[in-house]
Image (cartoon, rainbow, N blue to C red; front, side, top):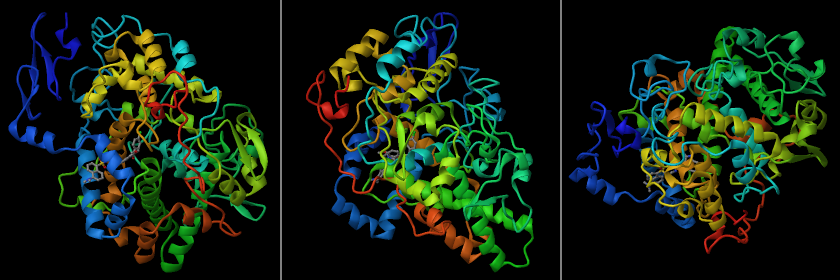
Length: 575
Ligand SMILES: COc1ccc2c(c1)c(CC(=O)NCCNS(=O)(=O)c1cccc3c(N(C)C)cccc13)c(C)n2C(=O)c1ccc(Cl)cc1
């Protein structure tokens, strides 16, 4: 039998079977040695001893406001730290990509097959005794039962950092440009580029891009309604738009991504980025009256890409991290470092980023309450209330907390599909992923959940802590104080996120200069982009509230409920 099924090799050692009843661990380049690569080299021992634990670092970063205010105001300190953030995070990601979904060992296919999501850990070999290798039961728990017990939202739980619904839709809109599962072909396939490529604004390929462009002054097609610019109707454009329910012709708009007509929040972002592109084209045309449509368009796209990454690092991740340390987007910090400007989207990153609990059950827009049912496939709500009211309302509404029992009923099918995909593609256990990202494996269900009742429920489902599945572990893991989600989502997702952002071509030395963005003015737009400006420079009326955090949100203390021991705040004991 395959002795590698028990994952005997530690610290990144590669297991190789030797005949039918022996194996060996390849510890090359791991800084460890011994039969199971468990003995650190001297220098590694020093590094490990010096490295603060993720929780220590987290508490340092979310506390000490006075200290970080000083650091934030000293440019070289802020840059020094941000450089370490980039390099520490990027080093964890294998580049070039190593594994794919069809081999439990390294292949050349994994590198050249662009239509696959890559894999950070290879699939569990088919011949292993249990789905997780050797740990746990031979059959994984029933998905409907798992979802019913662990994910179904009974009562909406607001995100306790004050994250707003405007944030939720930004997350969904932004991530759809690089998480493009080609369901028809299978969960391991994806149909797009591997990174922040703005296809969610400009269309999935050159064909759709040409349908969306006006070919005048570099601009995208648009129509004017109620004295505001909106995307054109699809009857005049003809891109492929997919709806989850039948849609009236006057509600079928041509957008950069086929899914974005389903939710008004996505339609809102599609609209504002279209307006921003056309605004930037006007600015560029004034500065370069000699430029043709193509040059205006291409430069506009590059400027919007730069603005996107800046907003994502300095506002979106800032809100996610809740750090007092001010995150900085500055590609020059990586110049001279060993860094590869290439990215491959991982299946595990896609799973990590399933934050459907962020979605509220209903939306209050300008005083009118809409259930999700009213909201779905109804983009004209944004036109009816106007962009300013719509963005103001979403900024003032709480997002849901990414925790157990907080998936809204319209998202349960998505999470069931995700769990099925995780099993079809034989994801390794949550604990194996913790080790892969330099986190200690949890030794008990209690340690994983920080909640007695939840630990018991999980124990009944899985039997062995080393058999808990990837997504289940992410969602049931206890929260750290003042954190949006558990330690594992941060320590695993942050590397993919920063690598995906900083490996973008525009961050490379040959691109990162004013001329790429049309000169000083375009360069200025990229270097001073904010969410607030994105909206307010594209609205005729006064600037509304535009925020990823609900204004004056009081961070309530999580109430300890029954069924958990002392440290209830980690899960609010909601089970
Ligand atoms: C907490 O909540 C969050 C939540 C999301 C977060 C982050 C933090 C972070 C920052 C980070 O990675 N936080 C870990 C330790 N910090 S660190 O940067 O590695 C670091 C390491 C070593 C020394 C440091 C240091 N020294 C020198 C004192 C100061 C500051 C940071 C230091 C990134 C990127 N996120 C994502 O984009 C993200 C996007 C999608 C997913 Cl699904 C998951 C995450």
